[in-house]
Amino acid sequence: QVHLVESGGGLVQAGGALRLSCKASVSVYAMGWFRQAPGKERDFVAAIDYNGDYTNYEDSVKGRFTISRDNAAKAVYLKMDTLRPEDTAVYYCAASHRSARMAKADVDYWGQGTQVAVSS
Image 1 (tube, rainbow, N blue to C red):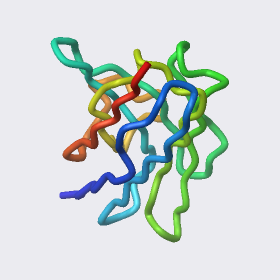
Image 2 (cartoon, rainbow, N blue to C red):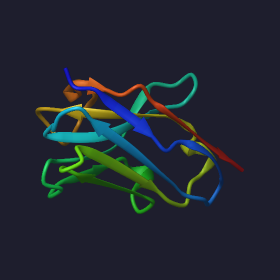
Image 3 (cartoon, rainbow, N blue to C red):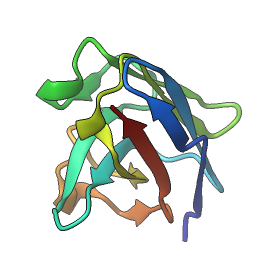
Image 4 (cartoon, rainbow, N blue to C red):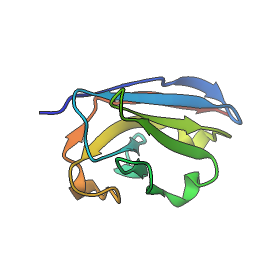
């Protein structure tokens, strides 16, 4: 069993920035982030493979969010810039042994989530 622990959420004004962190109990091939707004499904945000050679982003965050990882720390990060009110959601760290494309079905482990709120 892999445990994922997120941190870094909070309240920020539109146009601001936040950096989410997720630490895993063991190294996993692919790590990423999903988000879930109230009343909506959990959707993919970004993912990265083990060496950082491959990254994948949902279209609405391209150019604003940057995913990175530190394998020595068994951690993945999501730097979120130019935040918008529609980015408000609970952000979940995800890990997959199989695919950095990280469709929801590829996720083997989930974190508990961290709240991000963006005010207009």
